[in-house]
Length: 581
Ligand code: SAT
Ligand code: MN
Image (cartoon, rainbow, N blue to C red):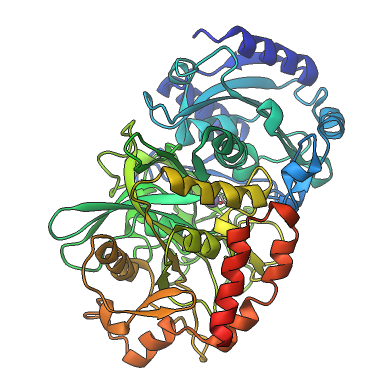
């Protein structure tokens, strides 16, 4: 493998700082993966699972304080604080280097420093980008093998000597007191220390593909988004591609591989977490999935909620922090209606029913995309797939209707920018708190979010046929506290409505201040057993509720000062005026 001079130099420098016992360049081969697994089985980093029912599957138990992304320890480090913006933690680059440098100095003593050249995106695509990361965690290397394309394929894709995002990762001492995830967009550099958890440690994912990726995308005129990508096939065989932004642990993976509960309809999986989207020469938005694996939430994944995922994780999967059955199989809440007897919990302790969950609520599976039964045949097309619709979805038990469509691009960007959601176990902190999470990018936008809104607005001028923009909420509850919409496989009914809108079919809609809402009759609810009242409630748009929900939005927008694009502020004012009328 031939690395560029700039890469070699940077690796030497990093080794000088972290002083590992040895440096090993990774080639991404199967033999290398097998060696890593073997080593981890020997040192206890991995436990084997039942190899006859779960061949090639292993269990990793993390440090109990290292189970989710830590947003409060995640920083964007730009020269000017304003370029990071009010929704990100900021630290001056010099200060961050001094601080993290202190944690990294000598951190790899006695350990192996693995050098991982990785490619985000399919080989041969002009949309793909290269990263080189170093790490002292074999678990991270094996996970990167699954999540990205490792080795020569990455080095060959470099467009120049220094065309790579550089990432330093060390477990450090795993103490949250010595943990920091620092991003330096001006230097295409990531320094992450003190955590082995996916979103903090698999640097290709959130750190590169979203935080630095979004900053790079703005400079180069494309979009790096927290979105799944699917192809929806209708009974005529036509496939309409959609991308959907939803916050972490809010159903992206389930929707990405949903099994349609409508005859003749089928959903093809392209990606479940990240979309890189470019405008092609014809003015068509096209998307690639930069990843090659899924890092999905295990709890509540079941034959009922996600049959494809349940099948896909039966082999060649690394599980993290799930529970273990006496027969050596993984288990998590929701997998089976009743927990099997004799479980060990995610920390390896005998589990007693009725206490805390057996699997950690943010326990995960890591599995190659190829294993997904619904994987789209063209998921690695270097040209990407043409996107006809974009969806912004969040988790709100009140106010937000099941689905509605924006009037135009600018209005859709406004709806995305105003998105709010209830927090989940994917981040350390309180669960169920409503917060603004524009485009589901709050934790992932690597620059000033005001500029991000402007960048989104600006994309329109290059799009000859801009995708339709939709807003969804599967999580609305009735007065009895129960979900109003069945969700999961039945979400395809909502996708069908979108496809009909996109393809120009006649569907009945109501025009409201927030956009077009389908009439209950426009949704195919055949065989669902939903009452018209329930459906009406799921789709209801209430002026009073909305005026209250929009209450803090001025304040949220005000943080951006002059960086908030005028069209966004105007849309908010207009929406309010229409509701008040
Ligand atoms: O844990 S990750 O950050 O990798 C996934 C997510 O939270 O969206
Ligand atoms: Mn995610």
